[in-house]
Length: 219
Image 1: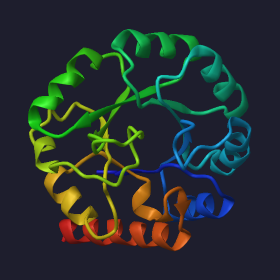
Image 2: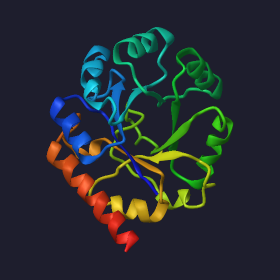
Image 3: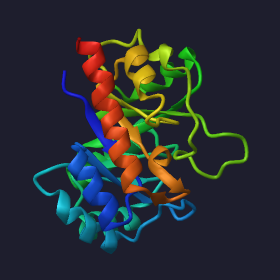
């Protein structure tokens, strides 16, 4: 099974090059002002050019209004929108209709019961991103470097298309793939040397760890 890999929160040419060289299927840009990974729409538009024909460029927003989404879509030309706030199923449908782009809806999880929150979005969101619930006091809905119990995903219906996110890094990706067997993974803080600072060497190390884990499982 092919595994989608999204490197999220990209801000530099070097990090972008490392993500593409490693074989990322998706590259993500954060449009949330409080995040250390925030990037201006025009700069994201410049950076995403390198991904054309190689990886899907994803615009990550948090409860963004139409005016800001209009600017992001015009200046960045994303292949996909990721809604990482408290957006309702109605809002997801509205955004899909307005831009004609696939939408990935992020949902925070900590226990199996949290998966119930996914149901109203089925048939509306094109994909889900399952992230850990933010720690108390965090202003960021994602990118906190926190993991959840991946085993709660093992019993998911095989028809649910999702990316696993939250606290992934080179050291634990093997366990995550073994326990949840996700169709996609998303990493941000796990390949950073400091908050918001992507490290090309850590990105390369992460891809090596993914390949090693998959080779072990295939053997």
